[in-house]
Amino acid sequence: MSDLVDCVILAASELATNAVLHARGSLRVTLERTGPGEVRLEVTDGSSRLPLQRRHSQLAGTGRGLQLVGALAEEWGVEVLAGRGKVVWAVFLGGAAGVPSQDSQGGLADL
Image (cartoon, rainbow, N blue to C red; front, side):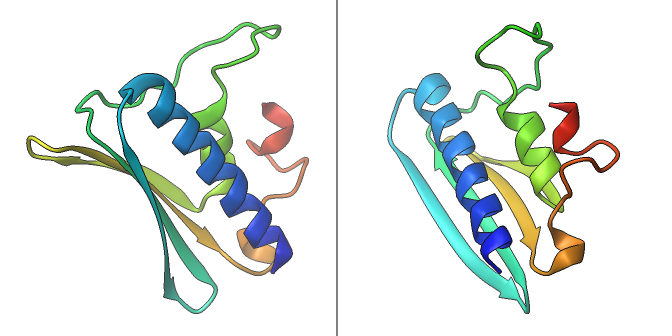
């Protein structure tokens, strides 16, 4: 279970940082247990600008947050709130199957 907690904390930090850097307004972080061993993270901000995964150089200090969230979460996405911003969300599953290994195909080692 601590692997799940670590993944959710890291993803929350990444998504909240994106909201602070790019939305430049208030934000709300919400966690909800949506089923046995399943957690949904939501970061809501007032900007209608959608997050973009960008190409970055190997030496860049930023630009990997959404890749990291994608590697940690079972799935993630964005919901536009008409005239009120957006919610960036990610779903995490507990247990060995829901936590990526360090060297899994397309996992953390590729970041």
